[in-house]
Image (tube, rainbow, N blue to C red; front, side, top):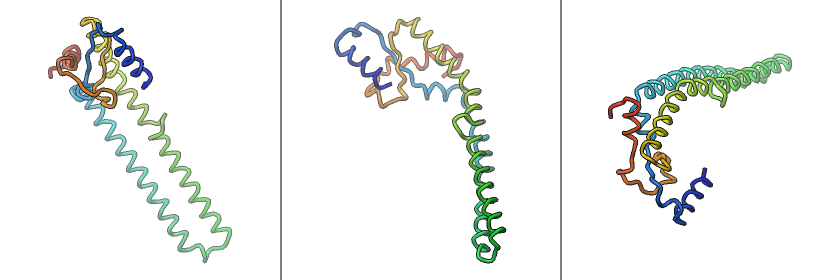
Length: 170
């Protein structure tokens, strides 16, 4: 990503892109104006919160198991002590597997985010591409990534055009 921007700015500095038209969008602004996006975000937060509560409860049970084990360890036979240790280890493995199932890179939350947000993002991207072709923009930057853009002139902000293309009044 950094290489791409370095190349763009290098070419701009050498004058080869000076005749091109540029614009930018504020992707965060656009997405927050789309009701289906904000509803999807709320839905994801709710699901995530439910899974987090489930994991916290499971972690609490494991912590209690471990606390009880520590209190009783000296009075237990080696066989019972080993059984309790195995139960704690097994519960910890289940906890970690559940955590990965819910919040891992391919977990339920990730899959749900993909299914809910990808169509919205594709629609926004198509609108941006359509505006770029219609208005003759060579590049449209995302203002939300402020680490790349130092200054933006509001005259080149096409965020409201994107919203209009999506049928959303701003």
